[in-house]
Image 1 (cartoon, rainbow over the protein chains, first blue to last red):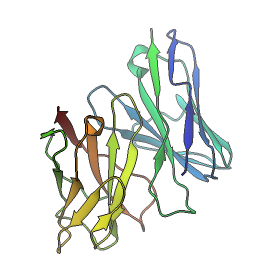
Image 2 (tube, helix red, strand yellow):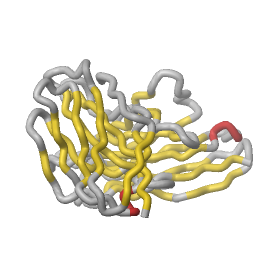
Image 3 (cartoon, rainbow over the protein chains, first blue to last red):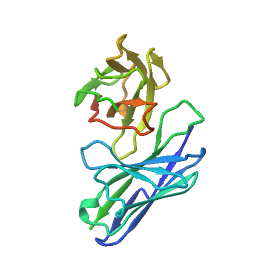
Image 4 (tube, rainbow over the protein chains, first blue to last red):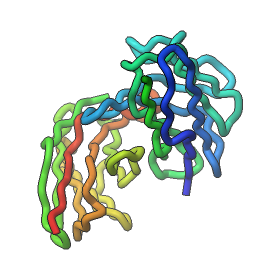
Length: 116
Length: 111
């Protein structure tokens, strides 16, 4: 079945530094990937839609200059949290769909970001 | 996407069937009903989806009301590994590809 690999699974960084999270579709091509954020005991909130070869589409209230998304190939999207602050600490999850099947969306295992 | 309403939490005994309800009274004709579940500290996992007819797969069954204003996810024999948050999501295939998550139902399975 469709597999989405997300790396790293957890990261701790100092306030003011940047962190890059990778999302790869392992056995299918994904022209579109999605980035979500989840705070403790809350549901997933869509941050942005990543489009291969073009600019990402950000949801209202998400700062595009802070959360940089790059989707340079059909199997890789990256999310860079720039100048991270403690309030950016969260669980970040990517998702993609193998349009060649009728199965639903596949999600990465998530990245737990802690900013200290 | 149209809104869904689910109970915040439910309890079940191990090896008993579980019926997880979802109300979606404003569903449109082009909305598919998706179910995902999220185990602790993991990304969501696809469970099942349907449009009008009931659906079965190896994980669960999806029963859809005739008027499509509600649906029920059925786990035939709950195991401890089924303890998770279950999300019922409507996806309009004519209006973009993203999934919008609601609050979900936290299922607790007792041994």
